[in-house]
Image (cartoon, rainbow, N blue to C red; front, side, top):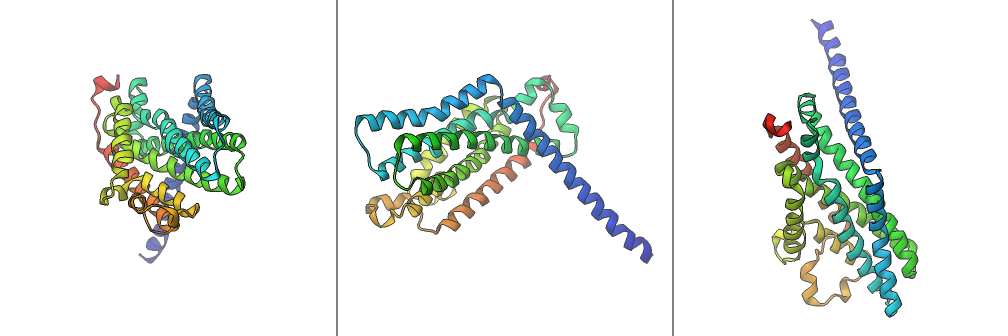
Length: 275
């Protein structure tokens, strides 16, 4: 009895370890596959255009009139972590389920252990990596055009903001992708406009669950603008410290992905749609 109990524990641990390894391998496989799909010429051309656009806007503005460092930072924030990251994630994260339905591969994903979760998390990782790479390239190009003072500090700050924007918005767009796969792009645009930009600007409790509030608050904190803000503008930022803002984004990402995974696991698609 004792021998069997002693032997059962290592076997269970070995099975759990093997299961976790298989799960991570599946997620890596999906990530690699989705990234390979994003490396086509049309997608690369679209990524290049997205990377050049903020620099082109900055060039046009600086050619018209010189701008100070603070205005440069505000423009970069609006163009890259807010606009470019959202647009990039709309075209990479939204088709997470719809593409598999159209290709008829959903039935094979659905019957594999952990297949749905691997599809969701692998696509999430690929969307974050691809969009983050495009956004960081755009950041470097824009800084080369603007040539602000202390550029290294701005690179570090905006790299963190880009990373948080990508993981936060990718998790947010995962919900429309699994709830309305055929209309995920339209639904995600509505979510971005209503939740992130409208609700995020409301001076109420609802803006506490938006990524945009956390990004604005981090920008104000790291640029040391808090004392210079007008009283009415303080309603649109959170007074918590930077670590609290980052942890809040991570918690929001976990909740959104867990909710999307739960819905995806319970979701049933009719065979006529799959075929």
